[in-house]
Length: 357
Image (cartoon, rainbow, N blue to C red; front, side, top):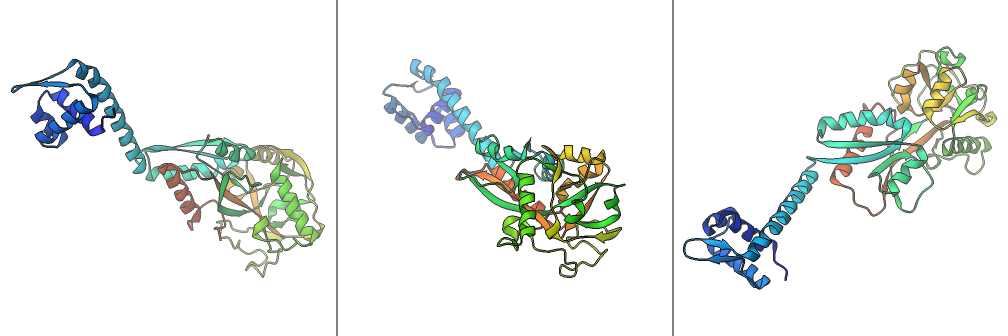
């Protein structure tokens, strides 16, 4: 006993109008087609749902029992289908994204503001998280996807590279290093370094040790986040005191200082904290210097600090969009990810990213 949706729609239309002619018009079918659907329904159920005579129809007791049930089912289905259509056409929906706390208060608000000018009816639920919690929230289904730096892989996750960014130094404006236009990592070794706990510092120290050791990994490139620029100004098109080859909108108002040799650099964090916001506040209080990504520039400025390019060597971090493996994204989430890649890849993007190669 499985009445079809068309049979149920025909009965509801007939019960509402009380007339075969009006019900047929409502259904956009002929009267004979409507009558056939009602007969098929009664045959399927094994009972009459309407009594007919030459002048009018009357809904039977069984029909009166079925009418509110069929009507509610059809209304619920129509609402669901309309909702799905709106989502498919990006007329409504919500995107849930997890990002590190620093990215949530610097880069993502810019992306969301640009997104809303194009899709004002699609909401963004932003989950600002500790870096290590980004992928956890993706795996749990709490968010549609996450954005974060390279981390040890999880078999249930798919990672797509979004951008690559160089580390930059952050110092107070009255710091001895602030008068220079760019620095080498050896310049930071003479000052207390404020760094982040966990894989941020572990990977940074590993990259530096790899460069210092000069062993089999000494010439590592993109795979481990180290660009082999080696501080050679002429090789990458820079001259002392010249411009930044990444065209990131900063001008060099002072001299280059890249003293010492990278093999002599031994970074030893004086303080390790959980959030970069804490590190920046400590730098602003004169407790040391730190390093961060270019997208943090708005927050660096709020703390009255200065960012300086770092090379000898240029160390970079790759950032990925993380999604659950073999799980389809909603149309809104898929559209937001595509928008994000376009935004980062734009020539005038303010993130300071190196475009994926």
